[in-house]
Amino acid sequence: MNTIEKIKKQIKENMILIYMKGTPQSPSCGFSAQAVQALSSFGEKFAYVDVLENTDIRNELPKYANWPTFPQLWVDGQLVGGCSIILDMLENGSLKKLILNTVKKYKKEL
Image 1 (cartoon, rainbow, N blue to C red):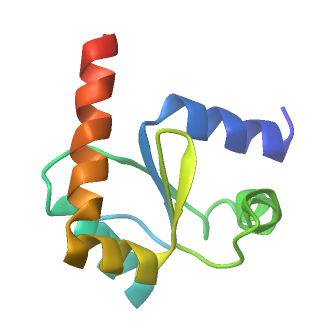
Image 2 (tube, rainbow, N blue to C red):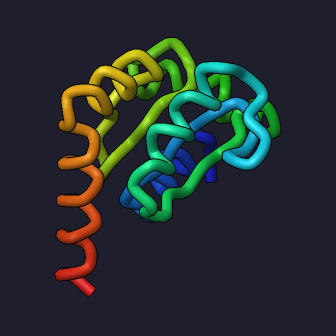
Image 3 (spheres, rainbow, N blue to C red):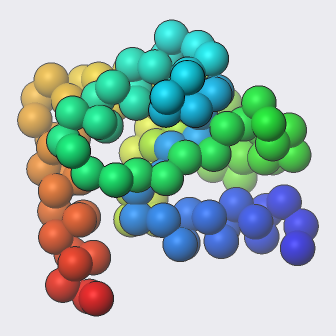
């Protein structure tokens, strides 16, 4: 499986996925830390990929997503954006709505 196929599989298999530097428990950059804190505030599970440990993904994802930086939040197969978008959405309430509606949708499908 090539890197793009791996990325597509990760996005498809995880309703909420963040590509970040480090881990949620130990972020390696301030932007990743802020994004994880915002996501964690809703109490829902999310998957992550540490791009520092996966250099192939770190190199290919920006081209695939047409988004140059990390973190990158993907919800229900769609790119939401990076840290500033996540924080803006947290502030205006749309991130909570997106996350909770996505979780509700996936629970119905199970």
